[in-house]
Length: 471
Image (cartoon, rainbow, N blue to C red; front, side):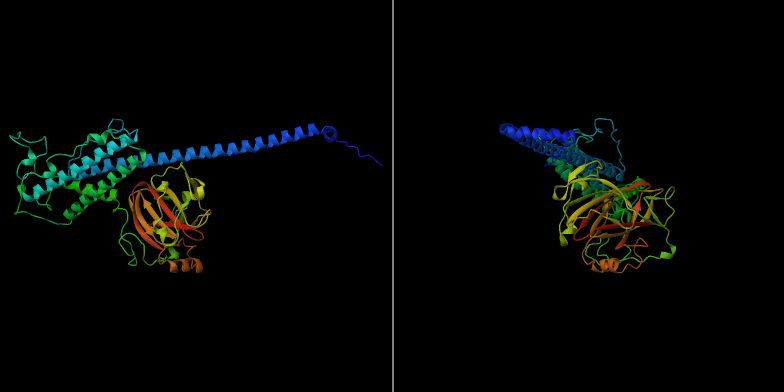
């Protein structure tokens, strides 16, 4: 018999160790137990490392949610201040705005401070609106406007202004902040909810003011007993007519009615949004097309008359509904504020971050699409002057589009069978002409950068968005 000799030093060492372990069983058991212990320590360490990573993710998501909520509340406070200034301008009584570095202009540091500022602005807006209406009524009736509290020309001998005949009850005393309201502790969520409610109510007040201004501009005149004091009527000239007209345009832009023009197709069911109507693929004359991609128009932009918006920040998928429920999918954090460094939990608990995508082909196809999900996109479009551009929009499945924070398109999945049949089963040059389109809307873009944001709901199969701009 020929013995096999291990030539490798390491193998010879292992063989010798094996012979020693065979002669000493207790040593073999000790080595085995130590190996098991080392394995358990490794597994437990990996588990602990996994727990630490998940804990860090949870902290990052919680921080992003707080930052998103704070950004949303800050924006609402800015809108409340803007609403107050627009009301003042519409009445020709603009006041000095708070300096950014002053105590009044400094951003609030706590939810309580944000809520107190929102409550104060809401009271000022309510009192201002009532005072403007009282002034208009006095001009129409020819009767003097009831004096504001504390501004009477002479002290009242007995009682107060509220007890005098003809005094407006709502103007007798400005609403005061209850002591309990200022001192009661408030959570960040409760503060954000109340600020949102106050801002929504103030928007309604501004919208009503816009309707009165538009009625006045359109010649709706109301006279009481012929000419009132000074011969003024609601439809007559006012001392600050030019400023009022300017304020009317600014209010329309702020509310959003100045962004979306009436649709060019009679197939839509209402003036602004396509929901349950029949989808339409607008025809395109390919002979005169100069196709381009990008996000700039005018000086420095592409020389094209049909530009495909192919660059977006995207995030998703979030949880979504199926079937008819897609049209009213629940809101998710990106709808409150766009923070491009934020991190959120999405569908099935996956960690989501914004990612920048430049599509190399048309249209913008979601490569990581998941059924019954919601996706968001954000980009900016630059123009060299104020202008109207036509937006050609198509989506699989439902999409809402916002221009400068105002919804300008809401395309539903109802009755779009003909649209899907046409664009998927018989192309007819839709891909070549950048025309996977279900409708179009004329939008007003301001000089400089304009924010575009979309919410895309996907049901079964894949998803895409087509957004093309033309002059």
